[in-house]
Length: 231
Image 1 (cartoon, rainbow, N blue to C red):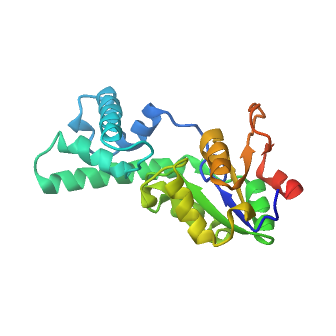
Image 2 (spheres, one colour):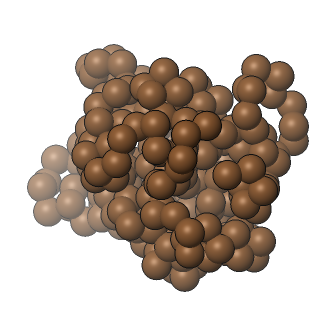
């Protein structure tokens, strides 16, 4: 591994963990229950069905790895229920705010991660590169948990318009890092996005494999604090 000057981290389930790993029903529950607009659907199952259907429709209309704002999905769902623009805006705003409030409540940052970040930041520049569909969401999560000070920049797919492992998001990241690829280390928990994609692009990479189950990655750790031992 070349001399490392910049460490890039994935965010969710790498730096910011979740109390419970969400599935489509949990994501739907974040938006639906308590939004004040539950009566637009026959029941929760109807909302889940619409949530999944509109996701499929939006993805079919885009190129592979092309990103969009999650709240635009809520807008399409509401557009099929209401016709008045003011009512549509109010409903979308309420459902989106409800989703984000509940999403944030499911997130935490472990104390050992905070300690490791403080140590790493004293030796290296650090950044976040995340597939995330809420504008400003990653930045807010980092600030809420008091770790935003450890990162020189945040790159998200919703802002770039492309998801990892698409090269466009890595290009945008490299431009911000302003160091050669071989001096960058990428750390994340997703084998395709954070290890295969990044090494193919030319970054160094370490897979965060908390359960030590991945047999394909040559370089991996089970915790962020292990990075202090291998860099």
